[in-house]
Length: 65
Length: 222
Image 1 (cartoon, rainbow over the protein chains, first blue to last red):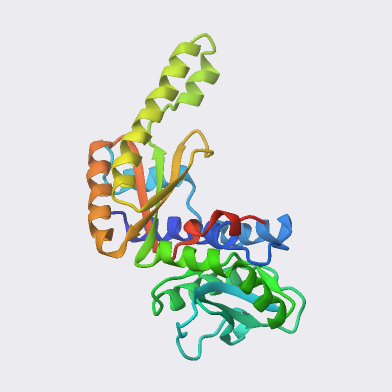
Image 2 (cartoon, each protein chain N blue to C red; image 1 turned 30 degrees about the horizontal axis):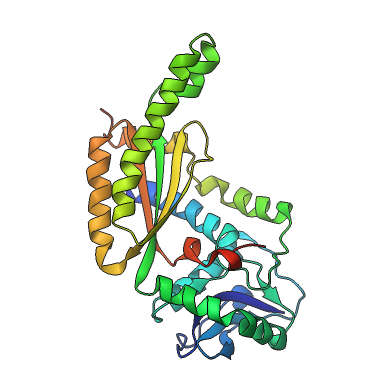
């Protein structure tokens, strides 16, 4: 469906979103600072695809009309 | 401190020798009849998120999900002072957790992002031509119709679905679908079919994931 590289990039972003923002919180309290969370996204920034990149990659792959 | 990865059925076993954050062994901790917890023990009061720890947390959830009939992933940072506190909490919420496990058993989560591929998107048009307020509103309505035309057939193939429209002007929709394992291929084919119908949009489907987005509401709140 999508190229491996594109799929991997979006998948990594989606993985981090799920681990940090979804799931049960049994303790009722998640003690993560905004700085901690920002740092994770910063560390992954080189690997994350912006929506603009998704478009460019799709066009490069010949999906453009 | 115990770092929680997931809740599983009380009778389920873990894969052997599973390594968690910072190499700590992952164990079943506490059980209250129908439910049990998956956790690792750490000698520090908190384990802060890093790229490596986040990926390891996800890897543990995936490894456990592969060998159990149902799983409720835990959010990173869900921690307890000790096994006693965890056992007490598990006991309090065991009914809801058991029902939550039953609701996701046999299903996986698939993610979808819908992005606009148009060269000039609706928000840009509005910024350049404030007198075309009507055109702007019509553009928004058109986009809502398009995302609905994609979301609805996919939601029909799912047990449950959630959507988030709070994205950017170009990210039209982020959605998650709880899909029976046996229907995943059919779901993906439907995404491909919808992509062909809507070549002006980019549809990116990810997964399958453990059901992070489909845990009981009351237990998803901080």
